[in-house]
Amino acid sequence: MHQLLEQFLKLKPPKFDGKGNPEAASLWTEELEKAFARNANDWWKATRGRVFPAGTTQTWTAFIEAFNGKFFSESAREQKFAEFLRLHQGQMTVDQYEAEFARLSKFAPRMVEDPVDKARRFRDRLKLDFRNQLILINLRDYNEMYERAQAVERDMMDRAAASG
Image (cartoon, rainbow, N blue to C red; front, side):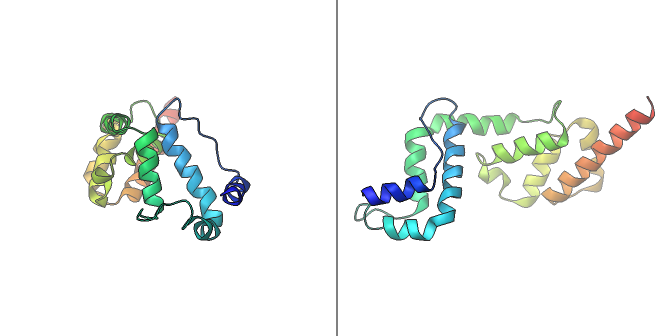
């Protein structure tokens, strides 16, 4: 076990103290996934029989579920889901809005698993001027919707700058 701990610490994993913003728990596991990806095969070989007790499902998903159960409560997940439902572009740029949309959509996977629903949800929460222009072209692809929204934003900024 001591050897396993040394191997883990060589990965320089991020620190997590279990306090503060519950979203930090999700970000921490993402950082751990990146660290494990570098040495996942060696780690898994060293860990498989020693860390997970007999009869326990030996998957990363099982670890994440246990971790989230401890540090990312159901009410915290519901709070993030509600944030996703309330998300609107508001005063954000299209890029800022898309970053928030992507970040919060992790907490509402069923609402964005269908590509058409994801694109529609993104479009419907844009500023009214942007949304009106994008509804007319009836895009069904999220990435194309995002790119068109960026183009609409650039066009509006260019027009505003040209008119003074």
